[in-house]
Image (cartoon, rainbow, N blue to C red; front, side):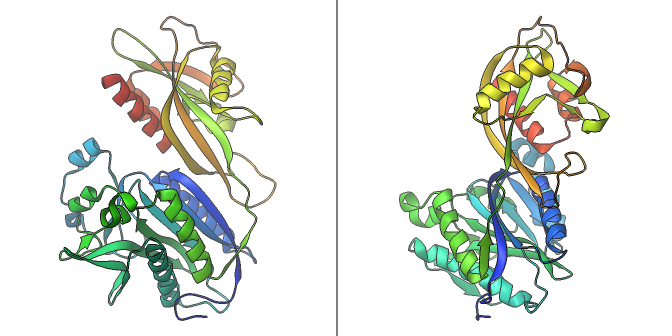
Length: 375
C-alpha cells in the first residue's frame, strides 16, 4: 500500500455512464455491491452525472436545507436521504460523481487509506488543469485557497458494510454553484464551494475531459487492474401524446404481468444498426399501430436492469441507456394495442400520467414535454 491509496493491483471494471437519476444510482450501487460481495469478483468503478438533487447523509438534518420543498420542486431539485456518512450535499449536471464499489477484505481493510486515495485522485485531476488543491484536516474532500477563502472543489461521502464500500466522490467541473447556496454544504458555514469553471473561466475543461483525467487517477490511486466490461444495451422511449380540447393527453399502456405490470408510454430496444429515431417510429407502429411526429427531448439516461424482470444467463449486473423522445399522434387516431406486451391503454392528462409513471426517466421526460408545451 502507498500513503495515499493502494498499491497492490486488484481486478476491477470501469462503468462510465452519462446521466443517471439519483434513485437509479442507488439501485445500481446496491446491485453492484451485492455482486462483488460473492466470490472473487472484480471491484466496480462507476463514473456518472446525476440530475439536480440534495442528498442527506447520516449526520444531516432538515435544517441543512434552507429553502422549501415547493421551491425546490419549481427548480427541479429533488431531495433524498442516504446511508452515506456526512451531512447534506448537492449533485447535478456539470459535476463528476464517482462510486468506487470495492471489496476491502483480504488485506485492504483500511477506509482511511481509501479516503486518502480518493482525495489524491481529485488533487491530481485539479493539478492537470493548473489548479492547486489540498486536503484539510478534519474535513474530507479537497479544498482550494481562493480570494474568497477556502472553497471545496471535491467532496467525499462513503458507506461501508462488511468491508464493501458504496457512494464515493463528487468533483465540481461546471455545476450550478447557486444550488449550493440553498444548503449548508457538508456542514460548513464558514467555507464556500468552487468548481473548475469558477476558478478557470473559459479555460475550464469539459465534463468529459475532466472525467478522463479523474478516472485515470482513480485507477492509479486505488490500484485498479481494469478488466473488460459489457457495454449497456440501448433503448428508446417515445412519450406518445395527442392534442385534446381539455389539454394534451399522454398514451399510457399497462404492461402484462410477466413484463412487470406497470404503466408506461411507448418504449423499445434498439436493434443492431438501427438509429434511435428509427427505433422510436418502429416501436410506436408495432405497439400501437400509430404513426406520428417525433421530437428529441435532449435526455438520455442509464439504469440497472432488474434481473427479476429481464432474465440473464449469468449474475453480472446489466445496464441500459435510454434515449427519450416525444411523439405527437393525430387526435383522432385509433390505438391498435399489441396484446403480448400490454393488456390495456388509456389517454391521460399530464398529471394523471405522471401519477401512473413508475420510473424516474419517464417522469423527467414528461416534465420536459410539459415545459415545451407551456413555452
